[in-house]
Length: 357
Ligand SMILES: CC(C)(COP(=O)(O)OP(=O)(O)OC[C@H]1O[C@@H](n2cnc3c(N)ncnc32)[C@H](O)[C@@H]1OP(=O)(O)O)[C@@H](O)C(=O)NCCC(=O)NCCS
Image (cartoon, rainbow, N blue to C red; front, top):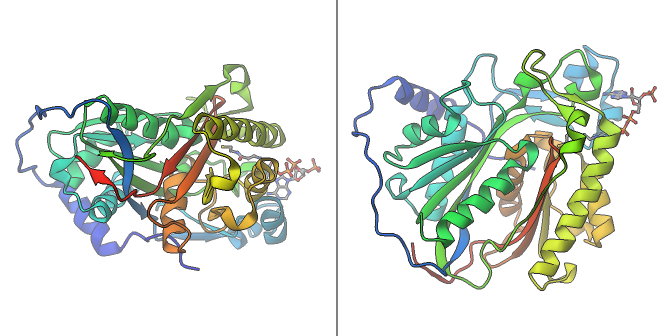
């Protein structure tokens, strides 16, 4: 099966060149008339971008005390993409955003707010979002980074829905963009094999919709922070894998159960379950507890590994390409990450109702 849209060298060169060019548009703030409250936020476009450089399991077999069979059996991961050393992440994120806007039939000029979820911004400050806004030409849009580790995309999506439903923004881009290769300890076989780089984005806008992006269930357990972290000195991901595994299954299962109940739905109403792509065994264990059959699971961790907050939009893009997502499909999203933080929500996919913004 084909991987998500791969960054094409020409596009990257074009975007990189754009990043060094003098911006033509003058900065301005948005003063659009707000929408009335009471509309529903919906998902209307998806885009994905992966670096060209592919790192297969043989790469680790050659360097560490590990092998392809162990990695596939314990994680489901067969390959992943990494940015070249020193390459910026913003052009990859911009490519995903541009693809999402095209998919939604929107122009960059319509974007009011750019939310980029990441734990690997190109610089400490400014964040990734202002640079992404500049690269895609969303001049005048608000731009902010959100760091909620592997649950970042769901936190960003919840905030985007709130902005749209309170009338504070009409069109919001939510982009998960990560370069976890920068945070991976290449000497540690327990983590080195697990992570990949990539970016995925969706367009959130308001409409008179049946479900749209319904209320999300978000959670945090700060007592568990030491089980998964990267600190300022070491700058490498450190993890108690088995414990993280156990918490990830339990929290994603509970949150999805709550989100279904809050939406007056049961598992039988779901067309697809898109969980954070950390490990295929985690996804399958959560699905088993929930009673979601295998054919309703989105799995692309085999091709991209764990891309943290980029994983859900990358999985959504892949699922749509694989024919698993049709307009109006009811989808459960669930994620879990360092903090611990987690979330789940029920969304309808590209609902074809009256779109107001
Ligand atoms: C990391 C993970 C794949 C390990 O799988 P596991 O089945 O839990 O394996 P364990 O950690 O119990 O380790 C089993 C053995 O495999 C070894 N091992 C770990 N990584 C290995 C590798 N890449 N190759 C070969 N052996 C490895 C361990 O050292 C251990 O050896 P021991 O029994 O001699 O001590 C799994 O725990 C996991 O996916 N955890 C969650 C990771 C995650 O999702 N993190 C981000 C959350 S957002």
